Each structure stands twice: as C-alpha cells, then as structure tokens.
Image (cartoon, rainbow, N blue to C red; front, top):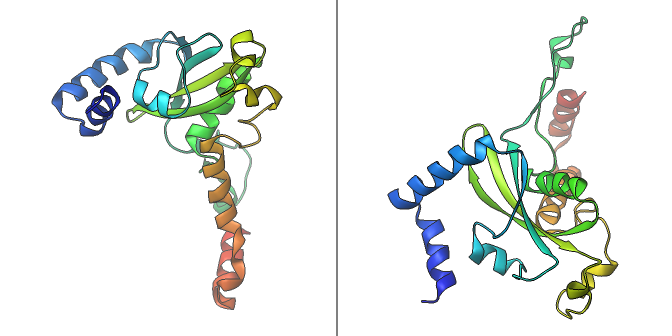
Length: 192
C-alpha cells in the first residue's frame, strides 16, 4: 500500500492510538480562534483527493463550528407555544456553512473544497482548501487555473458540500404531489 492508503486507513480505523492523538489535538484546538490558517493539512490524503497541492497560492484553513441546530434567543412577548420556535435545523449542512464563513474571512481567496477533521459534543472542525486567484503560480497551472474565472463558489453552492446541501433542499420540496390529501393537509397544519 502507498502512503495515502495508510493515512486513510489510520483515519478510518479510529483505534486507541488515533483516538488519543485526536483527543490531544482537540484540547489544543479548543483554545485557538475559530478560524486558523495552517501550513499543512491535517488529513493530507483527503486534501490531495480534493485538489490540494503543496505549492504557492494554496492555503488550508481550519474552522470550528458549533455542533447541532441553531438556537434562537428567547422571546419576551406573549405568543402561542407553537409560534415560539427556538430550535431550528438549518437547511444547509455544517460543512457548507464552514466554507461560507471561511470565504467571508478571506474574500480574496476562492474555496476549492473542504473536509471533516474532528468533532466532539460541542464543536465540529472542518478544513477548507482556499486558492488565491491572483497568484501567478495558480494562473500558470493548467490543472487549476479554471478557478480564476469563478467567484463566490461557496456562496452559490458550487463546492461539493454546497451541492450536497442544495440536493437535500431540492428533495424536500420536489415531490409534494405524491402525498395523499390527508398527509398534505396534516403537513400544512404542522407548518402553519
């Protein structure tokens, strides 16, 4: 087996050695800011699979997100319990949200892709691969210079995570006619 297969196997197994390593890293990562630019990707096999190259113009940023759904602050005026609505599950997945936040932090860069690194009960960490569109090394590289003409890939849902979340949202509203009339009326009552 080659190096990348061993690295992939190490991350897939989750035996005691890798669990201890991940636990130590999480203790350190919790103290860091939410978005950190790194010299090297944590999961080299995954980063290379998604298009990362160890050359100028490529940057990897790790981002920490709060796990779970969105919790809205409590309201102080009267309303039905039905309208109280504090817990929301977002329509976008956390990975797509991570890409958006990193892209907002670095507006001169373009998001190529991202991948999951680690998570605990409170947070999840993703690593986002960013590319500098204006860098000469990127402009001269035929494999990646297609990204020069693209703007706002993460915002438009053109990354892998964005496409997955768009597909999930499309599936929710695509086939409402297959329900029976009773199911439709129940769904409308639940929503409204």
